[in-house]
Each structure stands twice: as structure tokens, then as C-alpha cells.
Image 1 (cartoon, protein in one colour):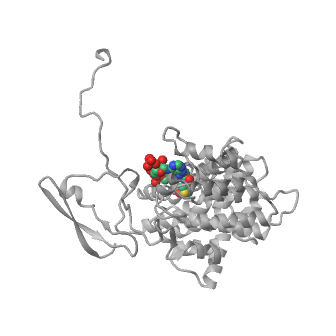
Image 2 (cartoon, protein in one colour):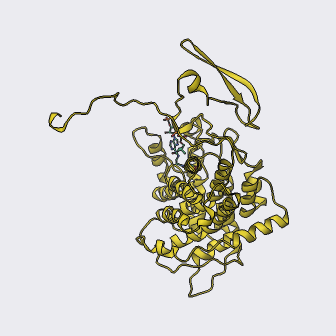
Length: 431
Ligand code: CMC
């Protein structure tokens, strides 16, 4: 916690309370209300945490007005163009850019943990073949805690470190196994001679019947997608991981909770929903009809891949993703892709419409990611598992930060109770 510089005064009725304020390294000041209930016998009310900081953190910073995303101070566009996913993992976990020797050691450690216990296969086989891969991931990642007992004691720094590396290393294997299972193909073991992204493509797309050579252009695009999703400060799934972890739950169980939260269409599920929407629109002449629906208060339809709780300007990840979509389709020789045409025209028309500009609704990371993933050969159901495997490092970094915070408490929100006051039980014959 930073040094207290100012105080805020809160008065209601005859009560006046002085509350400490803290200044962040960048961003708005915060009013510390932790003693408010003790001093004033009142709670604050902020469903959806629109104005509430639930923790302090040194990992990621977003300036929503500027459309800026920094990991440990480094802008996301620089990391996406100059760095690579495992280096960003190191940065998020340890707080600084590694030396050549440190990244070599880190890559070695991650690579040596890519296999999952052979018994895990039985968990996959228990699912129906038509299960959504996210359903499989929630179950199998939670099950990891039953296999890796030597890394579930969260009070031991060594066990926390091993759990972190295991999670980053095994998540691509689990996502690829979920995919292979749902399409009825044999599981493909990881290959430690491949880089992280190429290995994931290998586990998804190779078959025992023929050799698979990962395309370096697609590997780079895959790595960039992982990088762009690596962390995003206190979003819903990260807050879920922190809340689950605040009770002392083991890291595998906490990450499974994060995966469950990510699945929703307002969060990580938006990439699948967005591509399905673009396909439903189909042709550019139908765009006005869908824009009208998105603006209609009586229609629950929203433009998927549009809008963000924090960004009130372009999502910087969407800019990189749009450029990547052009590059990947171009390099794969896919000309005039109708979905990309619909996406670009939809973006253009929406950004000329006062409804979207006045509400500051811009394309987010999910708007273009599905187009790239589809061009690579992934079905829509795999989009959110890919988001989950990329975000795992963010979840685990935030979880580690929380667990090692000496002031950490169990997360326990208050409520504004609007139900019945105390009343006496009535026997069934008297009701
Ligand atoms: N299409 C049409 N209207 C929208 C949209 C949209 N995509 N997003 C927000 N609005 C309107 C909304 O109806 C509301 O209007 P009004 O003030 O008249 O009631 C206003 O904009 C503010 O919306 P909100 O729901 O109060 O804002 P929020 O901060 O609670 O929601 C959001 C943020 C991302 C859930 C929302 O913008 C949304 O549902 N977007 C579509 C889903 C999506 O793309 N999600 C991915 C987010 S980025 C990746 C991730 O974090 O996982």
C-alpha cells in the first residue's frame, strides 16, 4: 500500500468520517473505506465493482480513457511486436524482463512440465464427445489438484512456484486434449523440441498417420494471440481466481474457478459469440439491421466484440488483432474473406453511429481474434479455451501476488439486504 497523502471526508446525518486516501503510481486516487463500517455503521454499495478497487497490484495497468494497457509498465503493442509469450509470462510472474540465461532456464522449466499424468486421460474419456471444450477444461483443470499433491501447499514458496510452472505448461496440453476428444481423434503428446505456440498447434492439428510441420507464420500469430490475452488486471475471471484463492484454496482449484467465469459470453465467451454473430450477419448489406437491433432497448441483442467495462477508447489489443487478421489471411492466401469484410464494415458503420460513439463503445480484443483462429483451422468452440490457456499466466501471477500479500484477507463482500425481516415459522397445516 502506498503512503497516505490525503484524506476524504464523508458526512451523513450527524456523522462525519475522515477516510484515508492512497495514490497509485498511475491512475485515479483511491479512498480507503476499510474502516467505514467500524466507524460509521454503514456499508458501500457497488454491484459490479464499477468504482471499487478490491486489491492493490503491481502487475498490469489499464488506462481506459487513453486505450492503454501496460504489463509491469511495458505497453502491450511493444510486447506483441518485440517479445514472445513465454517472455511475457516471465515478466508477469517475476516483474522484470529476463536476461538471455533467465529466459532459457524458464523455457526449459516450462517445457519439462508439458505432459499431464497419464491417468488424466480417463477424466477426458468420461465426458460426452459433444461436450463443449470449456466444460472439459473446467473439470480437468480442477482435477489437477488430485494429481499434483506436491504443489498444493500454498504456504510453501517452492510449491507455489512449481504449481505456477505446471499450470502454464499443462494448459495447452489440456486444451488440445479437450479439442482432440471432441473431434474423436487420438490425443497427441507434447513435443519439447517445439516452441510453446508451435507445440500447441502440433497437439491440436497433428495426427499419428502423417507428419505435421507447424507453419512458422501461424506459430507467430498463435504466440501473439497468447500474448494479447495474457493478463488484464482485475477482470471478472481474475477476480474470481483471487476470491477463490482468498480462502486458501489450492491453485488448481482457483484456476478452474477462473475458467468457469471466463466462459460467459460477456467475458471470454465473447470471441465465440462474436464470430457466430459475424457469420449470422453474413453479408455487408445486413449490417444496418444488426446495428439497429443492438441499439434497440427492447432487443437483448448486443454487438459482440464491442464495448468494454474499462476501455472507453480503442482496446489496444483490438488494433494489434486487426492487423494480425489481415496478415494471417494474406499469408494463407485467403482473399476477400467474407467474415473479415463484414467485421471491418461493421466496425466502420458502428463507429460512425452516435449510439456507439456517445457510449464510447469500440471493438475489443474479441472482435478480430475469432477470424484469425478460424483461418488457422480452429472451430469456434475452441476460441474460449485458447483465451483460457493464454490468461492462465495472468491468473496465476495475480493469485501469487495475493497469496504473498501480508495484508491479504478472505474476500467477503457485504450486501444491501432487501428481503423479509425476522418472522416466525408457520406449520404446514396453518399456511
Ligand atoms: N452492443 C450494444 N450496446 C452496448 C454494448 C454492445 N456490445 N455494450 C454496451 N452497450 C450499451 C448498453 O446497452 C448500455 O446502454 P445504456 O446505458 O443505454 O443502458 C451501455 O452501453 C453501457 O453498457 P453496460 O452493460 O452498462 O457496460 P458494462 O461495462 O457493464 O459492460 C461489456 C461491458 C463488455 C459486458 C459490454 O460492453 C458487452 O456486453 N459487450 C459485448 C460482449 C463482449 O464483447 N465482451 C468481451 C469483453 S472484452 C474481453 C473480455 O474481457 O473477456
